[in-house]
Length: 150
Image (tube, rainbow, N blue to C red; front, side, top):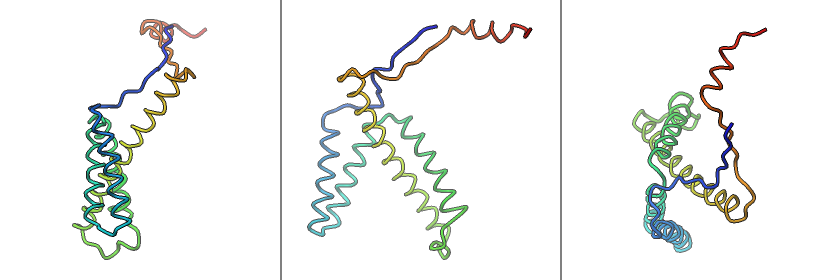
């Protein structure tokens, strides 16, 4: 049996230092627009932060959570819509599903980044230990499965 410790989680696609700067800058623009009432500045800041998050996370993770968001959006807005959406047409429902999936992807990508930074800090810097994986050789599992029961 082989034992391995997971020391670092690496969901990053691009690690350029301007990516977190863009996220913080976008958040500042959103806060400024909230304070001043300029909606276009807030939309630009949100778009800047969202694009930076998407650029930072590996496309496979983004695609996975986008698929989950599409599934949840189809269930929520298509199959079992709330009473408030009773008069909405198919175009509005499709747009709601698409925006839900996009926002869900951005939110979950952000969560992946925050969780991986926290895990990497706790497992690596503080040496608290991380996840432990135990692997067996493939032949050992097959031999156990082929042995007759007594």
